[in-house]
Image 1: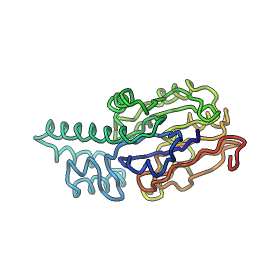
Image 2: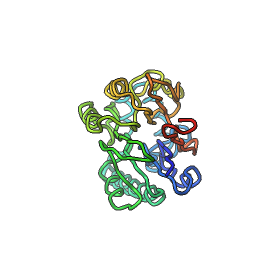
Image 3: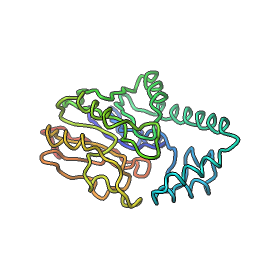
Image 4: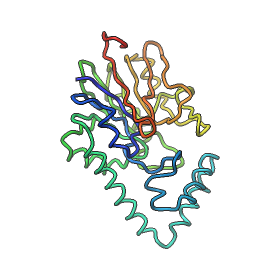
Length: 262
């Protein structure tokens, strides 16, 4: 079965049917739900808080003023913290239900920084089409794929972040593979720089070391929505940011070794 790769779904599951041909395997690289789309100011956060407040928070975050941004959200929630938390939990549950109902069979997936691991893993366990494969491997269309989920810590402290030690452990667990799949890129400036945000997102030095040492044929990832460079070689490994799916609606067609374009 042919393999198609998608990252940063961000709450656009209905577009999968058009992007992924029937009788194909989907590899899904995290950020399944849409907490906030900065380009359109839509998502769970703007549904719960005002667009004005979230826009101001986004501006402060872009300027690196994380504490000030967090203080705005704290003040907006003051006196109704439990109500807001329950509203967000409900919307997150509904968003995951919509995503997992739309997944083609089979879908191999890992999680990104905005994902809620416990909730997503529960839905994956209850969905026959979903194969959650963090820190594991799978043979897809004749090649060994390794899966490394999560993102490294930031001041935002979102649910899908893991420590460097945890990410390193996941990388060590997959061993040598033909294709390494992760949410975040290797720590290469060209792959980590977001041109719209105007800053470097956090890539993994351990993933970079893995790619340099093992030289898998492909390294697929997402996380950086508007990368300075979408593809580049590190030695013989082709590193590919497969794109911000919510905006592009396009899946990346994987080409196995020995086939045209491989």
